[in-house]
Length: 193
Image (cartoon, rainbow, N blue to C red; front, top):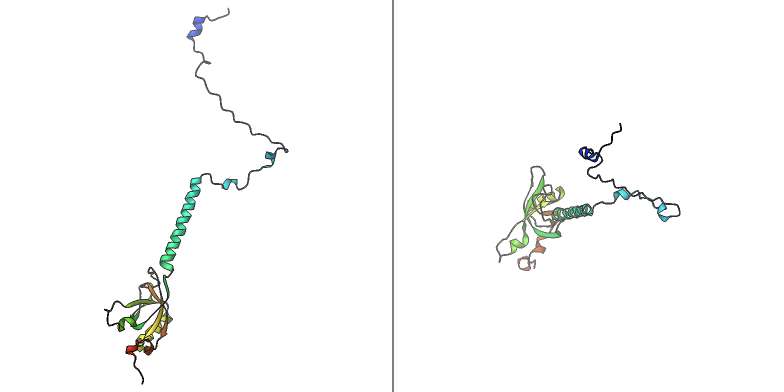
């Protein structure tokens, strides 16, 4: 006997082929194949292609970081390493000079400016506080202090103090002796008539 299901029996059974539609996978387009007479056949990918930035934001971030770093270096250089006063000079008497420092030993001193000592119309304003640039300069300053003679110092000033440079913004770079009779104003000079 051949079994033939009727329409009623067919509806009672599950049909495994009926169900939700499953989408077919998307087919990727094929890469075109070029022939030697086609100009695209001769174009090859550059060996530097992998170095191109994939995101412009990263590139601008790097550029911004470099600009900030350069500005920081310039600021540090201008604040700590570049003097804002150079080739300046001061005439006076060395009051004292001493070697100071815990870690960095530097020669610190005080100069009484000649123009401040001779000015009788104004109140004495300030001493010239300095750091000697090297030991040779410090020895010249010490000798002038012991002799009690006036000297001319050449100096430079910085915006900020560095520990190895001393505890003063003013750095004396040279010492010259001065003839006291030539630096006095005319009314204080002793005439040899």
